Image 1: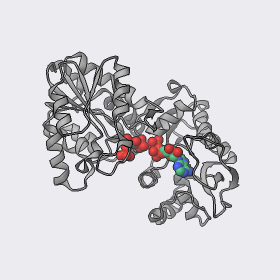
Image 2: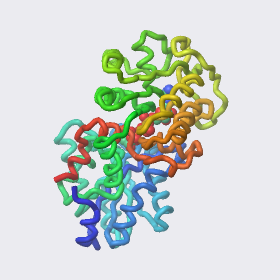
Image 3: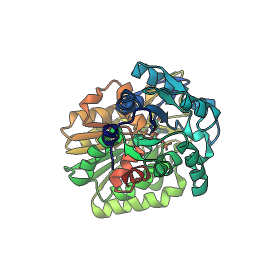
Image 4: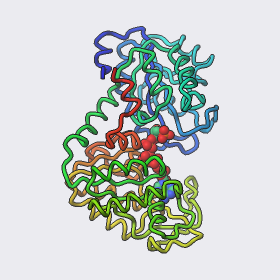
Length: 403
Ligand SMILES: Nc1ncnc2c1ncn2[C@@H]1O[C@H](COP(=O)(O)OP(=O)(O)O)[C@@H](O)[C@H]1O
Ligand SMILES: O=C(OP(=O)(O)O)[C@H](O)COP(=O)(O)O
Protein backbone atom coordinates (compact mmCIF):
# COMPACT_ATOMS: atom_id res chain seq x y z
CA UNK A 1 0.00 0.00 0.00
CA UNK A 2 1.53 3.32 -1.03
CA UNK A 3 1.10 5.99 1.58
CA UNK A 4 0.61 9.71 1.41
CA UNK A 5 4.27 10.12 2.39
CA UNK A 6 5.29 8.85 -1.06
CA UNK A 7 2.81 11.21 -2.68
CA UNK A 8 4.15 14.15 -0.70
CA UNK A 9 7.72 13.18 -1.54
CA UNK A 10 6.86 13.18 -5.26
CA UNK A 11 5.23 16.62 -4.92
CA UNK A 12 1.54 17.49 -5.13
CA UNK A 13 1.59 21.25 -5.68
CA UNK A 14 -1.21 22.24 -8.05
CA UNK A 15 -2.68 18.73 -8.18
CA UNK A 16 -6.33 18.08 -7.37
CA UNK A 17 -6.27 15.49 -4.60
CA UNK A 18 -9.52 13.68 -3.74
CA UNK A 19 -9.52 12.75 -0.04
CA UNK A 20 -12.18 10.13 0.79
CA UNK A 21 -12.72 10.89 4.47
CA UNK A 22 -15.27 9.64 7.00
CA UNK A 23 -16.91 12.82 8.27
CA UNK A 24 -19.95 10.85 9.47
CA UNK A 25 -20.16 12.76 12.75
CA UNK A 26 -23.03 12.64 15.25
CA UNK A 27 -25.35 15.62 14.86
CA UNK A 28 -28.11 17.14 16.94
CA UNK A 29 -29.90 19.17 14.28
CA UNK A 30 -27.00 20.98 12.62
CA UNK A 31 -24.80 20.92 15.75
CA UNK A 32 -21.92 18.44 15.73
CA UNK A 33 -21.92 16.68 19.11
CA UNK A 34 -18.49 15.10 18.61
CA UNK A 35 -15.94 16.20 16.00
CA UNK A 36 -13.48 13.33 16.52
CA UNK A 37 -13.75 12.06 12.96
CA UNK A 38 -13.02 15.52 11.55
CA UNK A 39 -9.98 15.91 13.80
CA UNK A 40 -8.83 12.44 12.74
CA UNK A 41 -8.45 13.39 9.09
CA UNK A 42 -6.76 16.75 9.78
CA UNK A 43 -3.16 15.46 9.52
CA UNK A 44 -3.84 14.27 5.96
CA UNK A 45 -5.75 17.36 4.85
CA UNK A 46 -3.22 19.70 6.42
CA UNK A 47 -0.21 17.90 4.96
CA UNK A 48 -1.71 18.04 1.46
CA UNK A 49 -2.77 21.68 1.75
CA UNK A 50 0.62 22.69 3.16
CA UNK A 51 2.25 20.96 0.16
CA UNK A 52 0.19 23.12 -2.23
CA UNK A 53 -2.38 20.53 -3.31
CA UNK A 54 -5.94 21.49 -4.19
CA UNK A 55 -7.69 19.31 -1.65
CA UNK A 56 -11.15 17.94 -2.44
CA UNK A 57 -12.63 16.25 0.65
CA UNK A 58 -15.58 13.88 0.22
CA UNK A 59 -17.55 11.77 2.67
CA UNK A 60 -20.90 10.23 3.45
CA UNK A 61 -22.99 11.27 6.46
CA UNK A 62 -25.72 9.02 7.82
CA UNK A 63 -27.78 6.86 5.54
CA UNK A 64 -29.79 9.10 3.17
CA UNK A 65 -31.63 7.22 0.46
CA UNK A 66 -29.59 8.09 -2.64
CA UNK A 67 -31.11 11.59 -3.05
CA UNK A 68 -30.43 15.00 -1.46
CA UNK A 69 -31.80 15.31 2.08
CA UNK A 70 -30.92 18.48 4.04
CA UNK A 71 -30.92 16.57 7.36
CA UNK A 72 -27.79 14.78 6.14
CA UNK A 73 -25.90 17.75 4.69
CA UNK A 74 -22.14 17.87 5.21
CA UNK A 75 -22.25 21.68 5.51
CA UNK A 76 -21.76 21.63 9.33
CA UNK A 77 -18.79 19.26 8.96
CA UNK A 78 -17.24 21.49 6.27
CA UNK A 79 -17.58 24.52 8.55
CA UNK A 80 -15.97 22.64 11.45
CA UNK A 81 -13.13 21.46 9.21
CA UNK A 82 -12.48 25.09 8.33
CA UNK A 83 -12.40 26.07 12.01
CA UNK A 84 -9.98 23.28 12.85
CA UNK A 85 -7.74 24.10 9.89
CA UNK A 86 -7.91 27.80 10.62
CA UNK A 87 -8.62 28.42 6.94
CA UNK A 88 -11.57 28.99 4.64
CA UNK A 89 -13.04 25.76 3.33
CA UNK A 90 -15.20 25.95 0.21
CA UNK A 91 -18.38 23.88 0.19
CA UNK A 92 -19.99 22.41 -2.93
CA UNK A 93 -23.76 22.01 -2.58
CA UNK A 94 -23.68 18.87 -4.75
CA UNK A 95 -21.22 16.02 -5.23
CA UNK A 96 -20.62 15.73 -8.98
CA UNK A 97 -22.80 18.49 -10.41
CA UNK A 98 -22.31 22.14 -11.34
CA UNK A 99 -21.47 23.30 -7.84
CA UNK A 100 -18.81 20.60 -7.37
CA UNK A 101 -17.23 21.35 -10.74
CA UNK A 102 -17.19 25.11 -10.15
CA UNK A 103 -15.86 24.70 -6.61
CA UNK A 104 -13.02 22.41 -7.66
CA UNK A 105 -12.15 24.55 -10.69
CA UNK A 106 -12.00 27.59 -8.43
CA UNK A 107 -9.69 25.99 -5.85
CA UNK A 108 -6.32 27.67 -5.53
CA UNK A 109 -3.17 25.71 -4.65
CA UNK A 110 -3.12 24.87 -0.94
CA UNK A 111 -6.87 25.37 -0.48
CA UNK A 112 -9.51 22.90 0.66
CA UNK A 113 -13.06 22.16 -0.52
CA UNK A 114 -15.69 19.76 0.82
CA UNK A 115 -18.25 18.13 -1.47
CA UNK A 116 -21.85 17.48 -0.40
CA UNK A 117 -22.76 14.03 0.96
CA UNK A 118 -21.68 11.25 -1.43
CA UNK A 119 -24.79 9.23 -0.49
CA UNK A 120 -27.06 11.89 -2.02
CA UNK A 121 -26.24 9.93 -5.21
CA UNK A 122 -27.67 6.44 -5.67
CA UNK A 123 -24.48 5.38 -7.48
CA UNK A 124 -22.40 5.65 -4.31
CA UNK A 125 -23.90 2.67 -2.49
CA UNK A 126 -25.41 0.78 -5.44
CA UNK A 127 -25.02 -2.99 -5.54
CA UNK A 128 -24.99 -2.69 -9.33
CA UNK A 129 -21.37 -2.54 -10.51
CA UNK A 130 -22.19 -0.46 -13.60
CA UNK A 131 -24.15 2.12 -11.62
CA UNK A 132 -21.31 2.48 -9.12
CA UNK A 133 -18.75 2.66 -11.93
CA UNK A 134 -20.67 5.46 -13.66
CA UNK A 135 -20.69 7.50 -10.45
CA UNK A 136 -17.00 6.76 -9.82
CA UNK A 137 -16.20 8.00 -13.37
CA UNK A 138 -17.84 11.31 -12.55
CA UNK A 139 -15.97 11.61 -9.25
CA UNK A 140 -12.71 10.79 -11.05
CA UNK A 141 -13.30 13.79 -13.30
CA UNK A 142 -12.87 16.04 -10.27
CA UNK A 143 -9.36 14.90 -9.32
CA UNK A 144 -5.85 13.87 -10.39
CA UNK A 145 -4.97 11.75 -7.34
CA UNK A 146 -6.93 9.73 -4.74
CA UNK A 147 -6.11 9.53 -1.05
CA UNK A 148 -8.13 7.02 0.98
CA UNK A 149 -8.46 8.18 4.58
CA UNK A 150 -12.03 7.30 5.53
CA UNK A 151 -11.16 4.33 7.70
CA UNK A 152 -14.71 4.10 9.12
CA UNK A 153 -16.04 3.24 5.65
CA UNK A 154 -13.35 0.91 4.26
CA UNK A 155 -15.62 -2.10 4.82
CA UNK A 156 -18.13 -0.69 2.34
CA UNK A 157 -17.95 -1.64 -1.34
CA UNK A 158 -19.04 1.83 -2.35
CA UNK A 159 -18.10 3.90 -5.41
CA UNK A 160 -15.90 6.43 -3.60
CA UNK A 161 -14.27 3.73 -1.46
CA UNK A 162 -13.78 0.86 -3.91
CA UNK A 163 -14.30 1.93 -7.53
CA UNK A 164 -12.77 5.40 -7.54
CA UNK A 165 -9.23 4.46 -6.42
CA UNK A 166 -8.96 2.12 -9.44
CA UNK A 167 -9.39 5.17 -11.68
CA UNK A 168 -6.68 7.39 -10.18
CA UNK A 169 -3.18 7.05 -8.71
CA UNK A 170 -4.05 6.10 -5.13
CA UNK A 171 -2.50 6.35 -1.68
CA UNK A 172 -3.47 5.64 1.92
CA UNK A 173 -3.74 8.69 4.16
CA UNK A 174 -2.24 9.07 7.63
CA UNK A 175 -5.40 7.93 9.44
CA UNK A 176 -5.76 4.67 7.52
CA UNK A 177 -2.06 3.94 7.98
CA UNK A 178 -2.33 4.49 11.75
CA UNK A 179 -5.55 2.49 12.17
CA UNK A 180 -4.27 -0.48 10.21
CA UNK A 181 -0.98 -0.40 12.12
CA UNK A 182 -2.76 -0.74 15.49
CA UNK A 183 -5.41 -3.26 14.44
CA UNK A 184 -2.79 -5.46 12.78
CA UNK A 185 -1.32 -6.05 16.24
CA UNK A 186 -4.67 -7.45 17.40
CA UNK A 187 -4.74 -9.95 14.57
CA UNK A 188 -1.10 -11.03 14.72
CA UNK A 189 -0.07 -11.02 18.34
CA UNK A 190 -3.05 -10.70 20.63
CA UNK A 191 -2.39 -11.02 24.36
CA UNK A 192 -4.95 -13.19 26.20
CA UNK A 193 -7.47 -13.20 27.75
CA UNK A 194 -8.87 -11.35 24.73
CA UNK A 195 -12.27 -9.82 25.49
CA UNK A 196 -14.54 -8.31 22.83
CA UNK A 197 -17.48 -6.15 23.96
CA UNK A 198 -20.15 -5.49 21.35
CA UNK A 199 -23.17 -3.22 21.39
CA UNK A 200 -24.68 -0.41 19.36
CA UNK A 201 -27.53 -0.22 16.91
CA UNK A 202 -26.10 -1.60 13.63
CA UNK A 203 -27.29 -5.00 14.71
CA UNK A 204 -27.37 -6.78 11.37
CA UNK A 205 -23.73 -5.95 10.49
CA UNK A 206 -22.43 -6.76 13.94
CA UNK A 207 -24.22 -10.04 14.50
CA UNK A 208 -22.54 -11.30 11.34
CA UNK A 209 -19.02 -10.67 12.68
CA UNK A 210 -19.60 -12.84 15.76
CA UNK A 211 -19.30 -15.88 13.52
CA UNK A 212 -15.55 -15.26 13.08
CA UNK A 213 -14.94 -13.66 16.48
CA UNK A 214 -16.04 -16.88 18.19
CA UNK A 215 -12.85 -18.43 16.83
CA UNK A 216 -10.63 -15.56 17.98
CA UNK A 217 -11.82 -14.06 21.27
CA UNK A 218 -11.88 -15.74 24.69
CA UNK A 219 -14.93 -13.80 25.85
CA UNK A 220 -17.58 -11.86 23.97
CA UNK A 221 -19.79 -9.49 25.96
CA UNK A 222 -23.06 -8.58 24.27
CA UNK A 223 -24.86 -5.31 25.01
CA UNK A 224 -26.65 -2.50 23.18
CA UNK A 225 -29.33 -3.15 20.61
CA UNK A 226 -27.96 -6.55 19.60
CA UNK A 227 -28.45 -8.07 23.06
CA UNK A 228 -32.17 -8.49 22.52
CA UNK A 229 -31.81 -10.79 19.52
CA UNK A 230 -29.75 -13.05 21.81
CA UNK A 231 -32.32 -12.85 24.61
CA UNK A 232 -35.06 -13.66 22.09
CA UNK A 233 -32.97 -16.61 20.84
CA UNK A 234 -32.97 -17.90 24.41
CA UNK A 235 -36.76 -17.80 24.31
CA UNK A 236 -37.28 -14.65 26.39
CA UNK A 237 -39.88 -11.94 25.84
CA UNK A 238 -38.10 -8.77 24.58
CA UNK A 239 -41.08 -6.42 24.15
CA UNK A 240 -40.42 -3.74 21.53
CA UNK A 241 -36.62 -3.90 21.85
CA UNK A 242 -34.48 -3.99 18.69
CA UNK A 243 -34.71 -7.41 17.03
CA UNK A 244 -32.96 -8.81 13.96
CA UNK A 245 -35.45 -11.57 13.29
CA UNK A 246 -33.76 -12.98 10.17
CA UNK A 247 -30.56 -13.59 12.14
CA UNK A 248 -32.23 -15.52 14.98
CA UNK A 249 -31.19 -18.95 13.62
CA UNK A 250 -27.57 -17.74 13.34
CA UNK A 251 -27.67 -16.43 16.90
CA UNK A 252 -29.03 -19.74 18.21
CA UNK A 253 -26.09 -21.42 16.46
CA UNK A 254 -23.59 -18.94 18.01
CA UNK A 255 -24.93 -19.76 21.48
CA UNK A 256 -24.52 -23.49 20.83
CA UNK A 257 -21.06 -23.10 19.31
CA UNK A 258 -19.85 -20.92 22.20
CA UNK A 259 -21.04 -23.58 24.65
CA UNK A 260 -19.22 -26.34 22.73
CA UNK A 261 -15.95 -24.47 22.18
CA UNK A 262 -15.74 -22.90 25.64
CA UNK A 263 -15.83 -19.31 24.42
CA UNK A 264 -17.70 -17.23 26.99
CA UNK A 265 -20.60 -15.50 25.29
CA UNK A 266 -21.87 -13.20 28.02
CA UNK A 267 -25.39 -11.77 27.83
CA UNK A 268 -27.01 -9.12 30.04
CA UNK A 269 -28.68 -10.50 33.16
CA UNK A 270 -30.84 -7.40 33.48
CA UNK A 271 -31.93 -4.42 31.41
CA UNK A 272 -33.15 -0.86 31.75
CA UNK A 273 -36.44 -0.62 29.93
CA UNK A 274 -38.94 2.13 29.11
CA UNK A 275 -42.23 2.37 27.26
CA UNK A 276 -40.75 4.23 24.27
CA UNK A 277 -37.46 5.35 22.72
CA UNK A 278 -36.39 8.46 24.67
CA UNK A 279 -36.34 11.99 23.28
CA UNK A 280 -32.63 12.59 22.75
CA UNK A 281 -32.99 16.33 22.25
CA UNK A 282 -35.17 17.33 25.20
CA UNK A 283 -33.59 14.66 27.44
CA UNK A 284 -36.61 14.70 29.76
CA UNK A 285 -36.45 11.85 32.29
CA UNK A 286 -37.67 8.58 30.81
CA UNK A 287 -39.96 6.13 32.64
CA UNK A 288 -37.01 3.77 33.04
CA UNK A 289 -37.13 0.68 35.23
CA UNK A 290 -34.67 -2.14 35.78
CA UNK A 291 -35.89 -5.68 35.08
CA UNK A 292 -34.32 -9.13 34.86
CA UNK A 293 -33.29 -10.08 31.32
CA UNK A 294 -35.91 -12.84 31.25
CA UNK A 295 -38.67 -10.53 32.52
CA UNK A 296 -38.89 -7.70 29.99
CA UNK A 297 -42.56 -6.68 29.86
CA UNK A 298 -44.20 -7.04 26.44
CA UNK A 299 -44.96 -3.29 26.27
CA UNK A 300 -41.41 -2.16 27.12
CA UNK A 301 -38.20 -1.57 25.19
CA UNK A 302 -34.68 -2.46 26.35
CA UNK A 303 -32.49 0.66 26.23
CA UNK A 304 -29.45 -0.17 28.38
CA UNK A 305 -27.89 -3.04 30.29
CA UNK A 306 -28.99 -3.06 33.94
CA UNK A 307 -26.98 -2.59 37.17
CA UNK A 308 -26.17 -6.30 37.67
CA UNK A 309 -24.97 -6.58 34.06
CA UNK A 310 -22.73 -3.54 34.60
CA UNK A 311 -21.00 -5.34 37.47
CA UNK A 312 -20.84 -8.60 35.55
CA UNK A 313 -19.30 -6.98 32.44
CA UNK A 314 -16.79 -5.03 34.54
CA UNK A 315 -15.70 -8.30 36.17
CA UNK A 316 -15.33 -9.97 32.77
CA UNK A 317 -13.10 -7.11 31.61
CA UNK A 318 -11.03 -6.80 34.82
CA UNK A 319 -8.54 -9.61 34.09
CA UNK A 320 -8.32 -9.10 30.31
CA UNK A 321 -4.99 -8.56 28.58
CA UNK A 322 -6.65 -7.18 25.46
CA UNK A 323 -10.07 -5.58 25.07
CA UNK A 324 -11.73 -4.53 21.84
CA UNK A 325 -14.99 -2.64 22.36
CA UNK A 326 -17.41 -1.53 19.69
CA UNK A 327 -20.91 -0.23 20.23
CA UNK A 328 -22.46 1.60 23.19
CA UNK A 329 -24.17 -0.66 25.77
CA UNK A 330 -27.28 1.51 25.69
CA UNK A 331 -28.80 4.71 24.33
CA UNK A 332 -26.01 6.71 25.98
CA UNK A 333 -27.20 9.96 24.37
CA UNK A 334 -29.90 10.04 27.07
CA UNK A 335 -28.61 10.33 30.66
CA UNK A 336 -31.03 7.64 31.92
CA UNK A 337 -29.46 5.05 29.60
CA UNK A 338 -25.76 6.01 29.76
CA UNK A 339 -24.67 4.02 32.82
CA UNK A 340 -23.99 0.74 30.99
CA UNK A 341 -21.70 2.46 28.49
CA UNK A 342 -19.99 4.40 31.31
CA UNK A 343 -19.42 1.19 33.28
CA UNK A 344 -17.79 -0.57 30.33
CA UNK A 345 -15.60 2.46 29.53
CA UNK A 346 -14.53 2.66 33.18
CA UNK A 347 -13.82 -1.10 33.27
CA UNK A 348 -11.51 -0.73 30.28
CA UNK A 349 -9.62 2.04 32.08
CA UNK A 350 -9.46 0.08 35.36
CA UNK A 351 -8.01 -3.00 33.64
CA UNK A 352 -4.36 -3.40 32.73
CA UNK A 353 -5.37 -4.51 29.25
CA UNK A 354 -4.41 -3.01 25.92
CA UNK A 355 -7.74 -1.36 25.07
CA UNK A 356 -9.14 -0.48 21.68
CA UNK A 357 -12.43 1.39 21.34
CA UNK A 358 -13.86 1.42 17.82
CA UNK A 359 -16.79 3.11 16.14
CA UNK A 360 -18.11 6.58 15.44
CA UNK A 361 -20.62 6.50 18.27
CA UNK A 362 -18.48 4.51 20.71
CA UNK A 363 -15.59 6.95 20.35
CA UNK A 364 -18.02 9.86 20.65
CA UNK A 365 -19.60 8.27 23.74
CA UNK A 366 -16.25 7.99 25.49
CA UNK A 367 -15.58 11.69 24.96
CA UNK A 368 -19.14 12.93 25.55
CA UNK A 369 -19.36 10.96 28.81
CA UNK A 370 -16.22 12.73 30.02
CA UNK A 371 -13.52 10.07 29.73
CA UNK A 372 -9.98 11.01 28.71
CA UNK A 373 -9.58 9.58 25.22
CA UNK A 374 -5.82 9.41 25.67
CA UNK A 375 -6.25 6.95 28.54
CA UNK A 376 -7.34 4.22 26.10
CA UNK A 377 -4.83 2.24 24.05
CA UNK A 378 -6.37 3.26 20.76
CA UNK A 379 -9.60 4.95 19.72
CA UNK A 380 -10.52 3.79 16.25
CA UNK A 381 -12.73 5.91 14.02
CA UNK A 382 -14.32 2.77 12.58
CA UNK A 383 -16.66 0.34 14.31
CA UNK A 384 -17.86 -1.98 11.55
CA UNK A 385 -14.56 -1.43 9.72
CA UNK A 386 -12.39 -2.42 12.67
CA UNK A 387 -14.61 -5.41 13.49
CA UNK A 388 -14.41 -6.71 9.93
CA UNK A 389 -10.66 -6.11 9.92
CA UNK A 390 -10.34 -8.18 13.12
CA UNK A 391 -12.45 -10.90 11.51
CA UNK A 392 -9.68 -11.22 8.93
CA UNK A 393 -11.87 -10.12 6.04
CA UNK A 394 -10.54 -8.36 2.96
CA UNK A 395 -11.92 -4.87 3.21
CA UNK A 396 -12.86 -3.30 -0.16
CA UNK A 397 -11.46 0.11 0.71
CA UNK A 398 -8.10 -1.30 1.80
CA UNK A 399 -7.86 -3.80 -1.07
CA UNK A 400 -8.44 -0.93 -3.50
CA UNK A 401 -5.43 0.90 -2.11
CA UNK A 402 -3.17 -2.17 -2.30
CA UNK A 403 -2.25 -2.38 -5.97
N1 LIG B 1 -30.79 -0.93 23.32
C1 LIG B 1 -30.65 -0.07 22.31
N2 LIG B 1 -31.69 0.20 21.50
C2 LIG B 1 -31.56 1.09 20.49
N3 LIG B 1 -30.41 1.75 20.21
C3 LIG B 1 -29.34 1.49 20.98
C4 LIG B 1 -29.40 0.58 22.06
N4 LIG B 1 -28.19 0.55 22.65
C5 LIG B 1 -27.41 1.41 21.96
N5 LIG B 1 -28.08 2.00 20.97
C6 LIG B 1 -27.63 3.04 20.03
O1 LIG B 1 -26.55 2.57 19.26
C7 LIG B 1 -25.98 3.69 18.61
C8 LIG B 1 -24.58 3.41 18.18
O2 LIG B 1 -24.56 2.24 17.40
P1 LIG B 1 -23.46 1.94 16.29
O3 LIG B 1 -23.57 2.92 15.18
O4 LIG B 1 -23.64 0.49 15.95
O5 LIG B 1 -22.09 2.15 17.10
P2 LIG B 1 -20.67 2.63 16.55
O6 LIG B 1 -20.89 3.90 15.74
O7 LIG B 1 -19.85 2.84 17.76
O8 LIG B 1 -20.18 1.50 15.68
C9 LIG B 1 -26.10 4.83 19.62
O9 LIG B 1 -26.65 5.94 18.96
C10 LIG B 1 -27.03 4.27 20.71
O10 LIG B 1 -28.06 5.17 21.09
O1 LIG C 1 -20.33 5.26 11.26
C1 LIG C 1 -19.74 4.42 10.57
O2 LIG C 1 -19.52 3.16 11.01
P1 LIG C 1 -19.58 2.64 12.55
O3 LIG C 1 -20.91 3.06 13.15
O4 LIG C 1 -19.48 1.15 12.38
O5 LIG C 1 -18.41 3.23 13.25
C2 LIG C 1 -19.17 4.73 9.22
O6 LIG C 1 -19.26 6.09 8.93
C3 LIG C 1 -19.84 3.87 8.16
O7 LIG C 1 -21.18 4.21 8.05
P2 LIG C 1 -22.24 3.12 7.51
O8 LIG C 1 -22.34 2.03 8.56
O9 LIG C 1 -23.54 3.89 7.35
O10 LIG C 1 -21.72 2.59 6.19
